[in-house]
Length: 469
RNA sequence: GGUGCGGUGGCCAAGUGGUAAGGCGAGAGUCUGCAAAACUCUUAUUCGUGGGUUCGAUUCCCACCCGCACCUCCA
Image 1 (cartoon, rainbow, N blue to C red):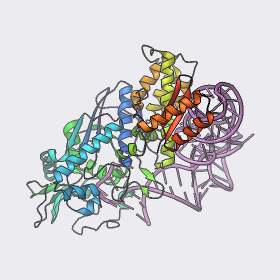
Image 2: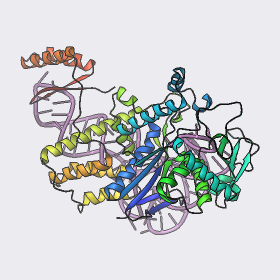
Image 3: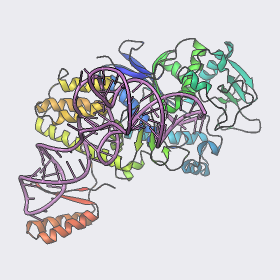
Image 4: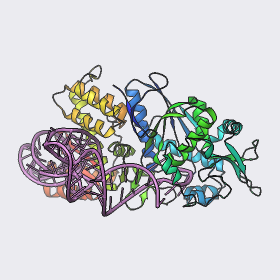
Protein backbone atom coordinates (compact mmCIF):
# COMPACT_ATOMS: atom_id res chain seq x y z
CA UNK A 1 0.00 0.00 0.00
CA UNK A 2 1.26 3.48 -0.78
CA UNK A 3 2.09 5.64 2.17
CA UNK A 4 0.71 9.13 1.70
CA UNK A 5 1.57 12.29 3.58
CA UNK A 6 0.30 15.83 3.30
CA UNK A 7 3.10 17.95 1.92
CA UNK A 8 3.00 21.58 2.99
CA UNK A 9 5.13 22.47 -0.01
CA UNK A 10 2.49 21.36 -2.52
CA UNK A 11 -0.50 21.67 -0.23
CA UNK A 12 -1.80 18.23 -0.98
CA UNK A 13 -1.51 14.62 0.01
CA UNK A 14 1.21 12.85 -1.89
CA UNK A 15 2.45 9.31 -2.12
CA UNK A 16 5.70 9.19 -0.22
CA UNK A 17 8.56 8.30 -2.53
CA UNK A 18 11.89 8.24 -0.73
CA UNK A 19 15.24 8.98 -2.28
CA UNK A 20 16.49 5.51 -1.34
CA UNK A 21 13.88 2.76 -1.74
CA UNK A 22 12.46 1.52 1.54
CA UNK A 23 14.34 4.04 3.60
CA UNK A 24 13.23 7.37 4.98
CA UNK A 25 15.53 10.16 6.11
CA UNK A 26 13.65 12.39 8.51
CA UNK A 27 14.74 15.65 10.09
CA UNK A 28 12.90 17.04 13.07
CA UNK A 29 13.22 20.48 14.60
CA UNK A 30 13.97 19.71 18.22
CA UNK A 31 13.53 21.73 21.37
CA UNK A 32 15.08 25.01 22.39
CA UNK A 33 16.59 24.15 25.72
CA UNK A 34 16.42 27.23 27.85
CA UNK A 35 13.33 26.07 29.71
CA UNK A 36 11.06 23.08 30.04
CA UNK A 37 9.13 21.74 27.09
CA UNK A 38 5.39 21.91 27.74
CA UNK A 39 2.83 19.37 26.59
CA UNK A 40 2.04 21.50 23.54
CA UNK A 41 5.62 21.08 22.38
CA UNK A 42 5.32 17.37 22.96
CA UNK A 43 2.33 17.07 20.66
CA UNK A 44 4.64 17.53 17.69
CA UNK A 45 7.06 14.88 18.88
CA UNK A 46 4.24 12.44 19.51
CA UNK A 47 2.90 13.00 15.99
CA UNK A 48 6.37 12.64 14.49
CA UNK A 49 6.93 9.51 16.54
CA UNK A 50 3.69 8.23 15.03
CA UNK A 51 5.13 8.88 11.58
CA UNK A 52 8.34 7.01 12.38
CA UNK A 53 6.46 4.10 13.93
CA UNK A 54 3.97 3.91 11.07
CA UNK A 55 6.86 3.67 8.60
CA UNK A 56 8.59 1.02 10.69
CA UNK A 57 5.29 -0.88 10.92
CA UNK A 58 5.23 -1.09 7.14
CA UNK A 59 8.77 -2.39 6.99
CA UNK A 60 10.60 0.81 6.14
CA UNK A 61 13.96 1.73 7.53
CA UNK A 62 14.07 5.14 9.15
CA UNK A 63 16.97 7.43 9.92
CA UNK A 64 15.83 10.27 12.09
CA UNK A 65 17.82 13.33 13.07
CA UNK A 66 16.81 15.83 15.73
CA UNK A 67 18.59 19.02 16.62
CA UNK A 68 18.87 20.61 20.03
CA UNK A 69 18.82 24.38 19.88
CA UNK A 70 21.24 25.28 22.61
CA UNK A 71 22.49 28.56 21.24
CA UNK A 72 21.26 31.98 20.35
CA UNK A 73 18.56 32.64 22.87
CA UNK A 74 20.30 33.02 26.15
CA UNK A 75 21.46 36.62 26.18
CA UNK A 76 18.47 38.37 27.65
CA UNK A 77 15.70 37.65 30.02
CA UNK A 78 13.27 39.12 27.52
CA UNK A 79 13.80 36.14 25.25
CA UNK A 80 12.80 33.67 27.84
CA UNK A 81 10.08 35.37 29.78
CA UNK A 82 9.96 34.80 33.48
CA UNK A 83 11.00 31.21 33.53
CA UNK A 84 11.51 30.50 37.17
CA UNK A 85 13.74 27.49 36.69
CA UNK A 86 16.13 29.39 34.49
CA UNK A 87 16.20 32.38 36.76
CA UNK A 88 16.70 29.97 39.61
CA UNK A 89 19.53 28.28 37.78
CA UNK A 90 21.16 31.63 37.24
CA UNK A 91 20.79 32.55 40.84
CA UNK A 92 22.67 29.38 41.59
CA UNK A 93 25.40 30.56 39.28
CA UNK A 94 24.84 28.08 36.50
CA UNK A 95 26.23 28.88 33.09
CA UNK A 96 24.28 28.97 29.84
CA UNK A 97 25.93 25.64 29.05
CA UNK A 98 24.65 24.10 32.25
CA UNK A 99 21.18 25.47 31.61
CA UNK A 100 21.17 23.87 28.16
CA UNK A 101 22.36 20.57 29.58
CA UNK A 102 19.77 20.65 32.33
CA UNK A 103 16.84 21.27 30.00
CA UNK A 104 18.07 18.85 27.37
CA UNK A 105 18.02 16.10 29.96
CA UNK A 106 14.59 17.18 31.17
CA UNK A 107 13.34 17.13 27.60
CA UNK A 108 14.40 13.59 26.92
CA UNK A 109 12.97 12.39 30.22
CA UNK A 110 9.60 13.71 29.06
CA UNK A 111 10.15 12.43 25.54
CA UNK A 112 10.77 8.90 26.78
CA UNK A 113 7.91 9.03 29.26
CA UNK A 114 5.65 9.58 26.25
CA UNK A 115 7.12 6.48 24.58
CA UNK A 116 8.72 8.39 21.75
CA UNK A 117 11.53 6.50 20.03
CA UNK A 118 14.91 8.16 20.39
CA UNK A 119 16.16 9.75 17.16
CA UNK A 120 19.10 8.01 15.53
CA UNK A 121 21.08 11.23 15.72
CA UNK A 122 20.64 14.01 18.28
CA UNK A 123 22.69 17.05 17.42
CA UNK A 124 23.26 20.07 19.64
CA UNK A 125 23.77 23.20 17.55
CA UNK A 126 26.88 24.22 19.47
CA UNK A 127 28.73 21.18 18.13
CA UNK A 128 28.21 22.20 14.51
CA UNK A 129 29.49 25.76 14.42
CA UNK A 130 32.14 24.73 11.88
CA UNK A 131 29.54 23.33 9.50
CA UNK A 132 27.46 26.49 9.81
CA UNK A 133 30.47 28.67 9.05
CA UNK A 134 31.17 26.53 5.97
CA UNK A 135 27.56 26.90 4.85
CA UNK A 136 27.74 30.65 5.29
CA UNK A 137 30.96 30.76 3.30
CA UNK A 138 29.25 28.87 0.48
CA UNK A 139 26.35 31.32 0.50
CA UNK A 140 28.73 34.26 0.52
CA UNK A 141 30.60 32.85 -2.46
CA UNK A 142 27.36 32.63 -4.40
CA UNK A 143 26.46 36.21 -3.56
CA UNK A 144 23.48 35.63 -1.28
CA UNK A 145 24.86 37.54 1.69
CA UNK A 146 25.48 41.11 2.78
CA UNK A 147 26.91 42.68 5.88
CA UNK A 148 25.29 45.26 8.12
CA UNK A 149 26.27 46.51 11.53
CA UNK A 150 24.98 43.66 13.62
CA UNK A 151 25.66 40.72 11.37
CA UNK A 152 25.71 38.92 8.03
CA UNK A 153 22.30 38.67 6.37
CA UNK A 154 20.69 36.63 3.64
CA UNK A 155 19.36 38.65 0.71
CA UNK A 156 16.03 37.00 -0.01
CA UNK A 157 15.60 38.87 -3.28
CA UNK A 158 18.47 36.83 -4.74
CA UNK A 159 16.51 33.59 -4.51
CA UNK A 160 13.72 33.56 -7.11
CA UNK A 161 11.41 31.15 -5.33
CA UNK A 162 12.03 32.44 -1.83
CA UNK A 163 8.97 31.80 0.30
CA UNK A 164 7.56 28.94 -1.75
CA UNK A 165 6.75 26.97 1.38
CA UNK A 166 4.49 29.60 2.91
CA UNK A 167 3.25 31.04 -0.39
CA UNK A 168 4.24 34.19 -2.17
CA UNK A 169 1.25 36.24 -1.10
CA UNK A 170 2.00 35.43 2.48
CA UNK A 171 5.60 36.59 2.17
CA UNK A 172 4.56 39.78 0.43
CA UNK A 173 2.04 40.48 3.17
CA UNK A 174 4.61 40.33 5.93
CA UNK A 175 4.60 43.56 7.81
CA UNK A 176 7.90 43.92 9.47
CA UNK A 177 7.63 45.68 12.75
CA UNK A 178 4.12 44.48 13.35
CA UNK A 179 5.26 42.76 16.49
CA UNK A 180 9.01 43.17 16.55
CA UNK A 181 11.17 46.21 16.04
CA UNK A 182 12.22 46.72 12.44
CA UNK A 183 15.86 46.63 11.45
CA UNK A 184 16.31 49.62 9.17
CA UNK A 185 19.54 48.33 7.70
CA UNK A 186 17.99 45.25 6.17
CA UNK A 187 17.46 45.44 2.43
CA UNK A 188 14.16 43.55 2.45
CA UNK A 189 11.77 42.83 5.29
CA UNK A 190 12.15 39.07 4.92
CA UNK A 191 15.97 39.11 5.01
CA UNK A 192 17.34 37.26 7.99
CA UNK A 193 20.56 36.91 9.96
CA UNK A 194 23.03 34.17 9.12
CA UNK A 195 25.64 35.28 11.63
CA UNK A 196 25.20 37.79 14.42
CA UNK A 197 28.10 39.72 15.89
CA UNK A 198 28.60 39.88 19.61
CA UNK A 199 27.98 43.42 20.76
CA UNK A 200 31.32 45.15 21.46
CA UNK A 201 30.52 45.89 25.08
CA UNK A 202 29.11 42.45 25.73
CA UNK A 203 30.88 39.24 26.61
CA UNK A 204 28.55 36.39 25.69
CA UNK A 205 28.85 33.02 27.31
CA UNK A 206 28.33 31.45 23.91
CA UNK A 207 30.28 33.02 21.08
CA UNK A 208 32.71 31.85 18.43
CA UNK A 209 35.34 33.31 16.14
CA UNK A 210 34.45 33.38 12.44
CA UNK A 211 35.84 34.93 9.25
CA UNK A 212 33.28 37.72 9.68
CA UNK A 213 33.86 38.45 13.33
CA UNK A 214 33.16 37.00 16.73
CA UNK A 215 29.55 36.13 17.32
CA UNK A 216 27.05 33.35 16.98
CA UNK A 217 25.02 31.74 14.19
CA UNK A 218 21.59 32.98 13.11
CA UNK A 219 18.69 30.86 14.30
CA UNK A 220 18.06 29.08 11.03
CA UNK A 221 21.62 28.03 10.28
CA UNK A 222 21.78 25.06 12.58
CA UNK A 223 18.98 23.09 10.96
CA UNK A 224 20.29 23.61 7.44
CA UNK A 225 23.83 22.65 8.40
CA UNK A 226 22.97 19.64 10.53
CA UNK A 227 20.24 18.22 8.33
CA UNK A 228 22.53 18.23 5.31
CA UNK A 229 25.46 16.91 7.32
CA UNK A 230 23.56 13.85 8.50
CA UNK A 231 21.01 13.24 5.77
CA UNK A 232 22.60 14.64 2.64
CA UNK A 233 21.86 17.74 0.57
CA UNK A 234 18.32 16.55 -0.15
CA UNK A 235 16.35 14.90 2.62
CA UNK A 236 13.11 12.97 2.49
CA UNK A 237 10.87 14.45 5.15
CA UNK A 238 11.34 17.55 7.23
CA UNK A 239 9.02 17.83 10.24
CA UNK A 240 8.16 20.59 12.62
CA UNK A 241 5.43 22.66 14.22
CA UNK A 242 3.13 24.79 12.11
CA UNK A 243 4.71 27.95 13.45
CA UNK A 244 7.89 27.22 11.54
CA UNK A 245 6.39 27.31 8.07
CA UNK A 246 6.64 31.00 7.31
CA UNK A 247 9.96 31.83 8.89
CA UNK A 248 12.21 29.06 10.11
CA UNK A 249 11.58 26.46 7.43
CA UNK A 250 11.27 29.06 4.72
CA UNK A 251 14.71 30.31 5.66
CA UNK A 252 16.19 26.84 5.99
CA UNK A 253 15.11 26.24 2.41
CA UNK A 254 16.64 29.53 1.32
CA UNK A 255 19.98 28.74 2.96
CA UNK A 256 20.21 25.14 1.85
CA UNK A 257 18.92 25.54 -1.67
CA UNK A 258 20.88 28.75 -2.11
CA UNK A 259 24.08 26.94 -1.18
CA UNK A 260 23.53 23.65 -3.02
CA UNK A 261 21.17 24.51 -5.84
CA UNK A 262 19.27 21.33 -4.96
CA UNK A 263 15.89 20.69 -3.37
CA UNK A 264 16.38 20.72 0.39
CA UNK A 265 13.48 18.50 1.48
CA UNK A 266 11.01 16.59 -0.68
CA UNK A 267 8.23 16.52 1.92
CA UNK A 268 7.34 18.98 4.64
CA UNK A 269 5.16 17.76 7.44
CA UNK A 270 3.77 20.27 9.92
CA UNK A 271 1.95 19.53 13.13
CA UNK A 272 -0.68 21.97 14.30
CA UNK A 273 -0.72 23.46 17.74
CA UNK A 274 -2.24 22.38 20.96
CA UNK A 275 -4.20 25.35 22.27
CA UNK A 276 -6.01 26.08 25.47
CA UNK A 277 -9.48 27.51 25.36
CA UNK A 278 -8.97 30.73 27.24
CA UNK A 279 -5.31 31.46 26.72
CA UNK A 280 -4.91 30.38 23.10
CA UNK A 281 -1.82 28.39 22.30
CA UNK A 282 0.28 27.03 25.08
CA UNK A 283 3.23 29.34 25.14
CA UNK A 284 6.58 29.43 26.79
CA UNK A 285 6.42 33.14 27.32
CA UNK A 286 2.83 33.32 28.55
CA UNK A 287 3.76 31.94 31.92
CA UNK A 288 2.14 28.94 33.52
CA UNK A 289 2.10 25.91 31.33
CA UNK A 290 1.86 22.17 31.76
CA UNK A 291 4.84 19.90 31.41
CA UNK A 292 4.85 16.17 30.92
CA UNK A 293 6.47 15.72 34.31
CA UNK A 294 3.49 17.46 35.92
CA UNK A 295 1.02 14.89 34.62
CA UNK A 296 1.77 12.17 37.19
CA UNK A 297 1.44 14.80 39.92
CA UNK A 298 -2.09 15.35 38.70
CA UNK A 299 -2.78 11.63 38.70
CA UNK A 300 -2.30 11.01 34.98
CA UNK A 301 -0.14 8.49 33.20
CA UNK A 302 1.92 10.48 30.65
CA UNK A 303 0.69 7.97 28.10
CA UNK A 304 -2.85 9.22 28.72
CA UNK A 305 -1.61 12.42 27.10
CA UNK A 306 -0.16 10.42 24.23
CA UNK A 307 -3.54 8.74 23.82
CA UNK A 308 -5.18 12.17 23.94
CA UNK A 309 -2.98 13.30 21.04
CA UNK A 310 -3.69 10.12 19.09
CA UNK A 311 -7.39 10.93 19.26
CA UNK A 312 -7.06 13.93 16.94
CA UNK A 313 -5.45 14.11 13.51
CA UNK A 314 -2.09 15.89 13.58
CA UNK A 315 -3.18 18.50 11.04
CA UNK A 316 -6.05 19.67 13.16
CA UNK A 317 -5.66 22.08 15.99
CA UNK A 318 -6.07 20.31 19.31
CA UNK A 319 -7.76 22.08 22.16
CA UNK A 320 -6.61 21.12 25.60
CA UNK A 321 -9.04 20.72 28.46
CA UNK A 322 -8.90 18.76 31.67
CA UNK A 323 -12.26 17.25 30.84
CA UNK A 324 -10.93 15.88 27.56
CA UNK A 325 -7.71 14.64 29.19
CA UNK A 326 -9.80 12.84 31.79
CA UNK A 327 -11.87 11.24 29.02
CA UNK A 328 -8.66 10.18 27.30
CA UNK A 329 -7.26 8.71 30.50
CA UNK A 330 -10.43 6.69 30.97
CA UNK A 331 -10.31 5.62 27.36
CA UNK A 332 -6.75 4.39 27.76
CA UNK A 333 -7.67 2.51 30.94
CA UNK A 334 -10.52 0.88 29.06
CA UNK A 335 -8.34 -0.09 26.12
CA UNK A 336 -5.75 -1.63 28.43
CA UNK A 337 -8.43 -3.55 30.30
CA UNK A 338 -9.77 -4.79 26.99
CA UNK A 339 -6.30 -5.84 25.87
CA UNK A 340 -5.74 -7.70 29.14
CA UNK A 341 -8.99 -9.55 28.67
CA UNK A 342 -8.05 -10.53 25.14
CA UNK A 343 -4.72 -11.82 26.37
CA UNK A 344 -6.42 -13.85 29.08
CA UNK A 345 -8.81 -15.31 26.56
CA UNK A 346 -6.11 -16.04 24.01
CA UNK A 347 -3.43 -17.39 26.27
CA UNK A 348 -0.75 -16.99 23.64
CA UNK A 349 -0.85 -14.76 20.57
CA UNK A 350 -1.12 -16.21 17.10
CA UNK A 351 2.40 -16.71 15.65
CA UNK A 352 1.97 -13.60 13.51
CA UNK A 353 -0.61 -10.91 12.94
CA UNK A 354 -2.93 -11.81 10.09
CA UNK A 355 -1.93 -9.15 7.59
CA UNK A 356 -4.59 -10.11 5.06
CA UNK A 357 -7.44 -9.71 7.54
CA UNK A 358 -9.85 -6.84 6.95
CA UNK A 359 -9.13 -5.21 10.27
CA UNK A 360 -5.38 -5.32 9.66
CA UNK A 361 -5.76 -3.70 6.27
CA UNK A 362 -8.08 -1.08 7.73
CA UNK A 363 -5.51 -0.29 10.39
CA UNK A 364 -2.66 -0.15 7.93
CA UNK A 365 -4.78 1.85 5.51
CA UNK A 366 -5.52 4.49 8.13
CA UNK A 367 -1.81 4.89 8.84
CA UNK A 368 -1.06 5.18 5.14
CA UNK A 369 -3.72 7.85 4.73
CA UNK A 370 -1.68 10.80 5.94
CA UNK A 371 -1.12 9.20 9.31
CA UNK A 372 -4.73 8.93 10.39
CA UNK A 373 -4.06 7.72 13.91
CA UNK A 374 -7.59 8.46 15.18
CA UNK A 375 -9.04 6.10 12.59
CA UNK A 376 -6.40 3.49 13.30
CA UNK A 377 -7.25 3.70 16.97
CA UNK A 378 -10.94 3.13 16.21
CA UNK A 379 -10.01 0.02 14.22
CA UNK A 380 -8.03 -1.25 17.19
CA UNK A 381 -10.99 -0.78 19.53
CA UNK A 382 -13.43 -2.46 17.19
CA UNK A 383 -11.15 -5.38 16.49
CA UNK A 384 -10.38 -6.12 20.12
CA UNK A 385 -14.10 -6.24 20.83
CA UNK A 386 -14.90 -8.37 17.80
CA UNK A 387 -15.49 -11.93 18.97
CA UNK A 388 -15.74 -13.19 15.41
CA UNK A 389 -11.97 -12.81 15.27
CA UNK A 390 -10.15 -15.63 17.12
CA UNK A 391 -8.64 -14.36 20.37
CA UNK A 392 -5.04 -15.33 19.47
CA UNK A 393 -5.39 -13.30 16.28
CA UNK A 394 -6.78 -10.35 18.19
CA UNK A 395 -3.90 -10.58 20.61
CA UNK A 396 -1.34 -10.73 17.84
CA UNK A 397 -2.97 -7.72 16.24
CA UNK A 398 -3.03 -5.76 19.50
CA UNK A 399 0.67 -6.48 19.99
CA UNK A 400 1.44 -5.30 16.46
CA UNK A 401 -0.79 -2.23 16.72
CA UNK A 402 0.83 -1.19 19.97
CA UNK A 403 4.15 -0.96 18.16
CA UNK A 404 2.59 2.05 16.44
CA UNK A 405 0.37 3.42 19.20
CA UNK A 406 2.98 2.84 21.91
CA UNK A 407 0.44 2.97 24.69
CA UNK A 408 1.92 0.13 26.74
CA UNK A 409 -1.28 -1.83 26.33
CA UNK A 410 0.13 -4.88 28.04
CA UNK A 411 2.40 -3.36 30.61
CA UNK A 412 1.50 -4.45 34.11
CA UNK A 413 0.55 -1.28 35.90
CA UNK A 414 2.78 -0.84 38.88
CA UNK A 415 0.96 0.65 41.78
CA UNK A 416 1.95 2.05 45.08
CA UNK A 417 1.11 0.17 48.22
CA UNK A 418 -1.69 1.60 50.28
CA UNK A 419 -0.62 3.39 53.47
CA UNK A 420 -0.97 1.02 56.42
CA UNK A 421 -3.74 3.06 57.94
CA UNK A 422 -5.90 2.81 54.82
CA UNK A 423 -5.00 -0.83 54.24
CA UNK A 424 -6.30 -1.52 57.73
CA UNK A 425 -9.61 0.12 56.83
CA UNK A 426 -9.87 -2.05 53.72
CA UNK A 427 -9.35 -5.21 55.79
CA UNK A 428 -11.76 -4.03 58.43
CA UNK A 429 -14.41 -3.41 55.83
CA UNK A 430 -13.89 -6.79 54.24
CA UNK A 431 -14.29 -8.45 57.65
CA UNK A 432 -17.47 -6.48 58.37
CA UNK A 433 -18.84 -7.42 54.99
CA UNK A 434 -18.10 -11.09 55.54
CA UNK A 435 -19.91 -10.83 58.87
CA UNK A 436 -22.79 -9.30 56.90
CA UNK A 437 -22.50 -6.07 58.85
CA UNK A 438 -23.35 -4.08 55.73
CA UNK A 439 -23.99 -0.86 57.57
CA UNK A 440 -20.45 -0.83 58.92
CA UNK A 441 -18.90 -2.00 55.66
CA UNK A 442 -20.72 0.68 53.66
CA UNK A 443 -19.57 3.34 56.12
CA UNK A 444 -16.00 2.20 55.68
CA UNK A 445 -16.35 2.08 51.92
CA UNK A 446 -17.58 5.66 51.97
CA UNK A 447 -14.75 6.71 54.27
CA UNK A 448 -12.21 5.14 51.94
CA UNK A 449 -13.80 6.75 48.89
CA UNK A 450 -13.45 10.14 50.58
CA UNK A 451 -9.74 9.43 50.80
CA UNK A 452 -9.55 8.47 47.15
CA UNK A 453 -9.60 4.68 47.56
CA UNK A 454 -12.24 2.95 45.46
CA UNK A 455 -13.40 -0.48 46.59
CA UNK A 456 -14.31 -3.37 44.32
CA UNK A 457 -15.69 -6.66 45.58
CA UNK A 458 -14.86 -9.49 43.23
CA UNK A 459 -15.50 -13.23 43.58
CA UNK A 460 -11.81 -13.56 44.38
CA UNK A 461 -11.99 -11.02 47.17
CA UNK A 462 -11.91 -7.28 47.74
CA UNK A 463 -9.57 -5.07 45.70
CA UNK A 464 -9.06 -1.35 45.52
CA UNK A 465 -7.74 1.33 43.23
CA UNK A 466 -6.86 4.96 43.64
CA UNK A 467 -9.17 7.61 42.29
CA UNK A 468 -7.59 10.15 39.97
CA UNK A 469 -6.94 13.77 40.81
C1' G B 1 -3.45 44.71 7.63
C1' G B 2 -1.60 39.94 5.18
C1' U B 3 -1.85 34.41 5.18
C1' G B 4 -3.99 29.87 6.51
C1' C B 5 -7.28 26.54 9.23
C1' G B 6 -11.66 24.94 11.59
C1' G B 7 -17.17 24.82 13.06
C1' U B 8 -20.12 16.94 13.12
C1' G B 9 -24.60 14.06 19.25
C1' G B 10 -23.79 16.36 26.50
C1' C B 11 -17.92 16.31 25.68
C1' C B 12 -13.54 14.74 22.44
C1' A B 13 -13.52 13.18 17.44
C1' A B 14 -13.04 10.21 12.21
C1' G B 15 -15.19 10.49 7.65
C1' U B 16 -17.66 10.40 2.68
C1' G B 17 -21.25 13.00 -3.57
C1' G B 18 -25.66 8.03 -2.02
C1' U B 19 -27.59 8.45 3.13
C1' A B 20 -23.02 9.68 9.96
C1' A B 21 -16.21 5.39 12.69
C1' G B 22 -14.39 5.28 17.59
C1' G B 23 -13.78 7.01 22.70
C1' C B 24 -15.78 9.58 27.15
C1' G B 25 -20.39 10.48 29.42
C1' A B 26 -25.56 9.21 30.05
C1' G B 27 -29.91 5.67 30.29
C1' A B 28 -31.77 0.37 30.74
C1' G B 29 -30.72 -4.76 31.88
C1' U B 30 -27.46 -8.96 33.87
C1' C B 31 -24.33 -9.54 38.09
C1' U B 32 -24.00 -7.74 43.44
C1' G B 33 -26.47 -7.63 50.32
C1' C B 34 -26.17 -2.67 47.95
C1' A B 35 -22.43 -0.64 45.02
C1' A B 36 -18.07 -0.61 41.95
C1' A B 37 -15.95 -3.36 37.96
C1' A B 38 -17.39 -6.43 33.94
C1' C B 39 -20.91 -7.92 30.17
C1' U B 40 -25.41 -6.82 26.88
C1' C B 41 -28.46 -3.13 24.74
C1' U B 42 -29.85 2.09 23.81
C1' U B 43 -28.11 7.11 22.92
C1' A B 44 -27.09 12.57 15.78
C1' U B 45 -33.27 11.32 9.98
C1' U B 46 -28.38 14.77 11.27
C1' C B 47 -23.07 17.33 10.22
C1' G B 48 -22.47 26.66 11.98
C1' U B 49 -26.41 29.77 8.87
C1' G B 50 -28.57 31.03 4.05
C1' G B 51 -28.48 30.13 -1.03
C1' G B 52 -26.70 27.28 -5.53
C1' U B 53 -25.02 22.82 -8.55
C1' U B 54 -26.88 17.61 -8.58
C1' C B 55 -31.41 12.26 -9.28
C1' G B 56 -29.09 12.94 -4.46
C1' A B 57 -24.59 17.24 -0.27
C1' U B 58 -22.65 16.85 5.88
C1' U B 59 -19.22 16.02 1.78
C1' C B 60 -18.68 20.52 -4.38
C1' C B 61 -19.56 26.15 -5.26
C1' C B 62 -20.98 31.21 -3.33
C1' A B 63 -22.24 34.45 0.67
C1' C B 64 -22.58 35.23 5.77
C1' C B 65 -21.83 34.27 11.14
C1' C B 66 -18.51 32.31 14.85
C1' G B 67 -13.79 30.46 16.62
C1' C B 68 -8.52 29.71 16.11
C1' A B 69 -3.46 29.90 14.43
C1' C B 70 0.75 32.17 11.86
C1' C B 71 3.21 36.88 10.22
C1' U B 72 8.53 37.39 16.91
C1' C B 73 12.20 32.82 19.84
C1' C B 74 8.31 29.21 19.84
C1' A B 75 6.18 22.40 18.46
